[in-house]
Length: 214
Image (cartoon, rainbow, N blue to C red; front, top):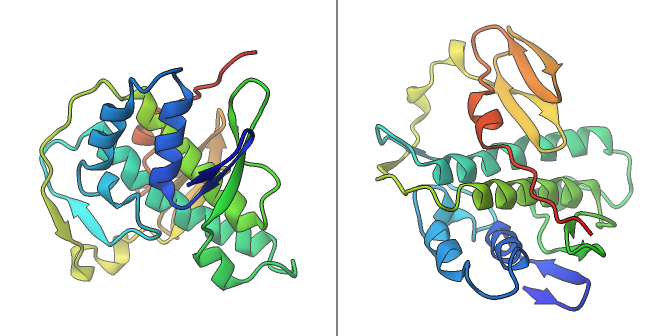
């Protein structure tokens, strides 16, 4: 992670989480907390990689931290497809650049807030917004306890073809997946699926807007 006074180069989602926690205090009081979070669960420990492995948490109770980190994978996938579909005719954009958006550079505004702005292409913009959402949401649950995790690789047969959620509903880092037979709508700024497949409970439960005022 390279940084100067107003610009920081982000190498992976874990970088964003680390910097966000540091930006919320004048000292290093959150260092131990963010380290514990990034070593936790099936998904938070994967934020340091550019792509998450296909895993699932089979624990009876999943921690809010791992829920949030798992959502980063969904957000990344959905936002990449959205960006590529909308801006496919942009010369600087390619499927390869969408699959590997790192490193990207964030800026810090006059109030000390992280801003995803002036990035190389829409896929970098989308990934930055997903990572920033992950960092904000993790910060909001930093004092909640960690739950025991039981990770395993996902097997294709675990999800029958007729119930698989194949479409993304939403935009701007707020997404849920849903089956093709259902309908995507919006309600109070959040995606909503009419049918059997979409669930917004976790998305709304952990959604946080942490912002410094000048």
